[in-house]
Image 1 (cartoon, rainbow, N blue to C red):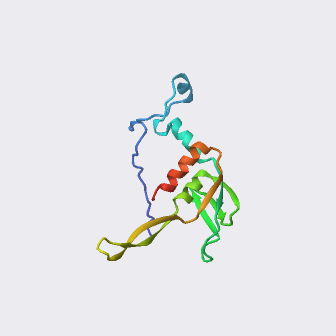
Image 2: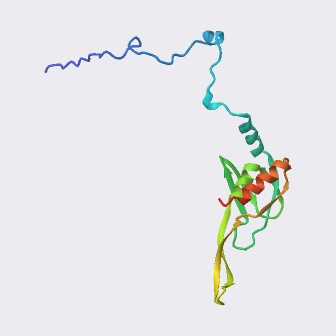
Image 3: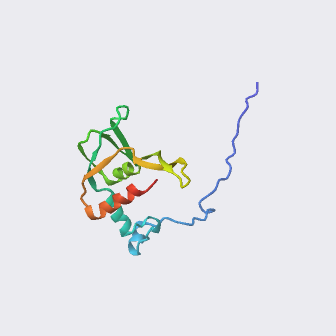
Length: 160
């Protein structure tokens, strides 16, 4: 019986002397001497910060009770992981403006027919598209009424 001996040869890998490092990490002592590098991809304008603060304001709203007994008694709103379960009971509830934006954009469409009489005396129907809120609500308190009322009118008038 012959013993078989396995031999392994270590192959040359890449050494750090062979690699050209483009963006070297500087030691903290060198960084402290010089200026600061500003990441321009993450710089927010004052208007963006103000808009974020505006959208985080808490409003007090009243969700109207469902008009039909088959409609849900609650409404679920989720904005970037901020989940709210709202009861449709006609009582005041507090939630952030970005949740109200979701409610204002939740609309349903239906067709309404109007009976018309043409100039020649013939009768017909004219169809028009009607939008209504899926979850009707009213705002009972807005901490920023001047800007908030125009914002809400704009959101409600948007056909989405």
